[in-house]
Amino acid sequence: MSTRGAALVRFYRLLDELQELNGGLQRLANAGPEGPWPRRGVVWFFEKGETRRESGDGPRVVRVGTHALKAALKSTLWDRLAADASGAHRGSQFRTFVGLALRDVMGRTEPQSWGRGADTAAAGAKRGMDADAVTRAEAGLEAAVSLYVGQMPFLFLAVDDSPGPNSQRAVIEKNSIALLSNYARPALDAPSKGWLGRRCSRDKVPQSGLWNTQHVDAAYDPSFMDSMKSCMEEMRQTLA
Image (cartoon, rainbow, N blue to C red):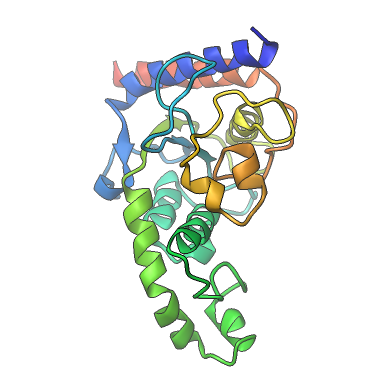
């Protein structure tokens, strides 16, 4: 087995342990602000029909996320989850990418404003539309994205460190993505032929097998799993 293959085996064994600490898989459709969420953390999403082969049996991770990666930000893990679950897609790359893929599956080219502009006003200005018109045009796809991502199981890891690009959360997120990504390297646990992400127009999504574009071309440092293990031990002590 390759070095990366062995690292993937270890990584998924850690997620198996994390699932026990989470009390099972979570779903955005059932999530609310009073859930078991830590103030800060990292999340890993799975998707129906997406399974592993080379690293063992079971579901494969399709998305890694965290929050508060700038020093001044005060967002919580729930803020991140809520934005992914039902917020406007411009506040969530996850929603943006899923929407692009769903639009393609539906055989549509509208709304053309999807994923464009910093906000609805900016998107509308390029098309002679006001912000309200853009919101109305995007409403159907926003609803379809909410329905789709709402059913995607996920796990969370409490990592309550200070916000910033060098935080432990940032390190775990980046290295998880880098390890899982198949971008420009031999594929391990490749996505299924029917994976929705193959229909996303952002090339790094289908090529990496993840609903991520940042860090998919990075090298991973396996020591990030030691950090995961330490954080899991802290969670276990909190639950004891």
